[in-house]
Amino acid sequence: MTTIGLRRMAPRDPTEAHRAASPLELLFDLVFVVAVGFAATNLHEIEVDGHVSSAVLAYAFVFFAIWWAWLNFTWFATSFDTDDWLYRVMTFVQMAGVLVLAAGVHAAMVEGSTTVVVLGYVIMRLALVGQWLRVAASSSEYRRTALRYAGGIVVVQVLWVLALLLPDRVSWGVIPVLILLEVLVPPFAEAGTQTTPWHTRHIAERYSLFTLIVLGEGLVASANAVIDGIAHADHLGSLLVLAACGLVIVAGLWWIYFSREQHDHIRSLPTALLFGYGHYLVFAAAGALPAGIEVAVSADAGEADLSHATVAATIAVPVALFVLSIWALALRPSLSLGWNVVVVALALAVLASIAVPSVSLVATALLVAAVVVVLEVADRRP
Image (cartoon, rainbow, N blue to C red; front, side):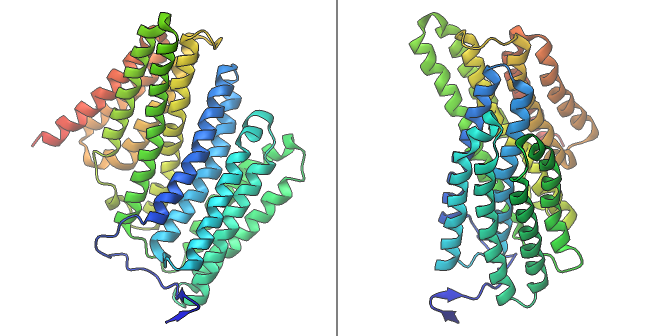
């Protein structure tokens, strides 16, 4: 039964066959990638200026805001996507919030002002509150859970807004507390009730698609290396090597991520939280990789006064973090003890390659390729 074109926001069947990402979800992802691209660009600029530690902290905060809003919409949509006009409008409001957040990325990461980022973030979160209130009005089965989600989100958003009244230096100290409160909302809302009806294959596909899009930014960075090489003929050889290594790394990370099905790891609330939250490291690492490739391009062109080890770290650290995160989330249960040790050792070797910066980029590419080979061999052993 519909009212002015609205459908009752009933839970979707978690065993629904052939459930795939909707065009609205794909558009939602693309809007978020705009914000990820801005974060990576500013990370590159700050790293080139030599402020690597502050760049990483600022990037981690901005990426949390992007990732957390994406994650909450994704898990909500897998359970309650009605695709009526109001659902679409409220989703577009969340997209508007993403664009506002993206507009504030530079100010947050370079100038330390979080006002615009928080404003965009609060817009996204409050739009989701409206969706949860629709669930509360439509489904008696999930009313308590929906109201817990709505109430928890509203309380934390009020705290975010109040934090804006504090001096910037003080507000940055409050941010970790607010992040902790945010990540506690889902376990609070789901505890002691029937968990919302996740479609595990749909969730795994949504995460896979977002990983693809974020890794694609690395291909753009590799293309930029070639473009810069054409513009600076005296650096053409080294920039072509850099571009080739960047391509190998991105292709290898893609291969590693998609070497195992991941939906089986979402069996209960604890495993869902581990899968969902653990992907912060996967996405953040993938998003930081293009910045590292661009830093290497700038350093090769003499536009960055950074040590070789620092340049190497901007690529090796994201790569190692990506591999170790996927190993912990998806690879570890499917590998024997011996193969697990080999994969972890190769990931740690990527970090160790920073100590030999003259060959670290090539070494990183080769080590990523070695992980791919290990996984392929492990699959074919009886």
